[in-house]
Image (cartoon, rainbow, N blue to C red; front, side):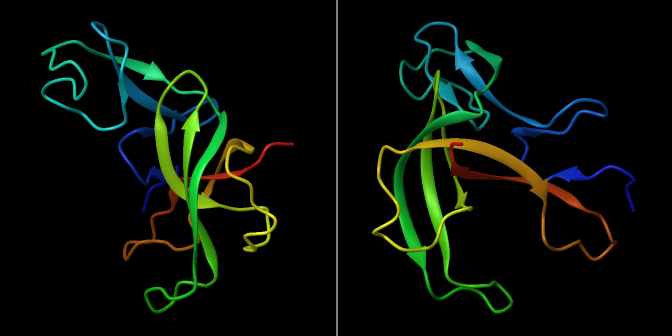
Length: 137
């Protein structure tokens, strides 16, 4: 069992000191940002052009879906969402801090990324750091 929470995704960085953050890869040829490691840029095809890029914690809501049926043990309803981050990068996660009511959620609304310990531990008792988005304050 780890003393520090583990990252739930490779692009979520959990430093020993300091705040967690999301890190993408920015193409030095065209500026495209990807969250996943790639052999070549998905936009321009450049090889060996990816450089680490810390992503912003603010952005806008691009799409959402209210989920009413899920895997057993997952509390529903929840809001699955896609957000475009300021400066580049697109993430998919859950939108929290707002009622799962389409009348209250607006596409293009300002969001911020927030980090928290995942609600469940793994079989060895390890905790995982995860990320969500919420309406910007």
